[in-house]
Amino acid sequence: MLREGPPLENLVRRLAETPADFLAEPRIGSAGVVPVAAVVSDVLNDLGGATLTRDQARCFDSNDAKKDRNRLGIALIGCWLLHDDWFRQQRTFANVALNFLTASAGELAAVTPAAKFITDSDRREELARLCLKDLGLRPANETDAQAQDRLSTLSSVERQRVIRAAKVAEERARAIREEMARKAKAEADARMMRE
Image (tube, rainbow, N blue to C red; front, side, top):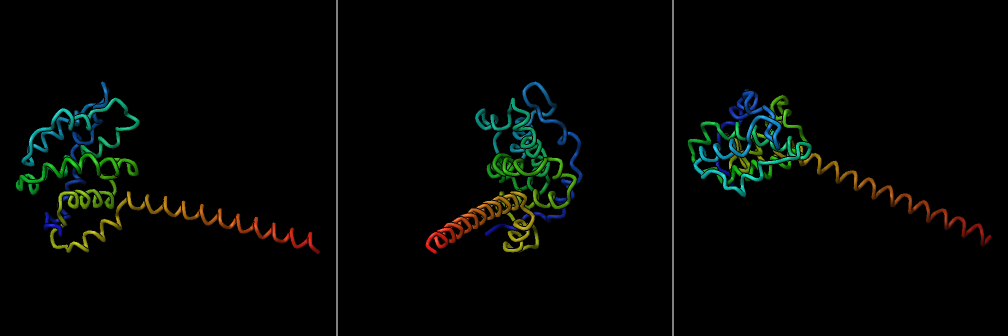
């Protein structure tokens, strides 16, 4: 069961008001502006945890812009979200916040551009809800079922999984139809030979 968290509206508004510093290019190799590992470390510290270890910081260092730019951009936006007063006052979310900033940011980066989490209202709500879920929380005044249902409805990761599953199912159905047509033709040819 999830604990009640802050009002969702506050988090969604916070995302819409993300300052330019958190939208700047993440440092990747010698390019970019924002050292993501340092920002993450500061946020975790403000959430009551320790600063990042060298191993943990490696998750936020990269030399491959094509592979990591979007993920690191989402991690920066996630840092802004997690730096909300409500989370900082609790001082208990550092460990689960790190998981949100690594695993969840990576999953989201595979399907959604980071900027969408600022410009698109559904993506802002998705990010806020996913953050709450990863922290073991649900939006204020929602039941666990309501929170889970709404997140499932919004989830771009889930939507992509469903689309992939539908494509696989369609491909399998096409292969079965082709095999059935091939067998029907072979049977028809066999009947013609016997007659």
